[in-house]
Image 1: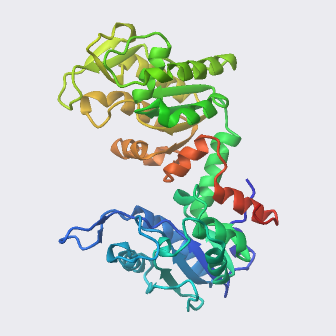
Image 2: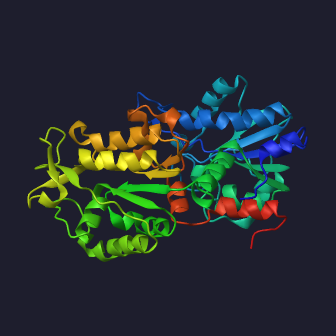
Image 3: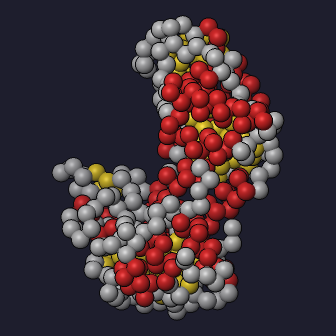
Length: 405
């Protein structure tokens, strides 16, 4: 994917003295209790935004940064919507003042070598609907627009899309550029075999992803409640496990589409069952064909985990979205742990995304052994669905010298 990058502009000496507008993702969790007073409880997104801001500052730019925070009502400011705590944390991380600017759409005062944080962009009337009047005003504030918020890349809003359409120059920041590179490596030009792990509670929430991947991957590993629907499609019993019997036909179609390409959806040969969905429920390993009517399937069994681990270790590329069992319960976490450690040990390029996936990566301490960890959430899922994200589309068009359609 051809997009202009901030690093390219800096290397070309095109940033010094320029007004640079960075759309970051600073949407961090806060404690809004009376005792918490808006204290930031987890600052990963703020820390991740620092390299882009530092790059622009070090290059001599006058830097403006904005982000959404929470779900405010446009035009109706409330104290809990303010980026003030974020400004304070950014100042600590950057080692310089970061003034917070309200009512900034009609003009911002900032000098080269300085940075300001522009108040919650979702407070602006017309932000979510990508109002062109608002977008043009934002674009007029800067010489260079930098999109560095992959988590918003699937939304065509004024601060993510409209400004990129009208700004003199529009480019990708280092976080967005890294996502583009990882996605391209995993899906557009993968080293084979390409294996995908898609797990979750319902086929209905991931059906378009499964259908899209069925046309691309060499192996499609399904887990969680999704796997139960696929087990039904394969004629295997699932007891009282979570499943969507009305989607068995679609699951069977995915299996057949894979088979027609010489690819496969490997079915579990054994599973871990319980009589109740509880952390302290006794775990029983059973052959997949011997699940009883009152059983709940809560994990893949050790033989299945070992089989899948072998495939993952022989893969060229791995895409991972979702744990394969109820890994929050220790008795039903072994399948996910085996899969996670196999991915970590594999020489394949791996890209992982989704909240539960990131939680599993953190639980097993394999962050350094996963090729790329996407923080995009919904954006990552839309990429797996085969969609072109609005941010990628407009930046590609601008790099080619074209405006938006």
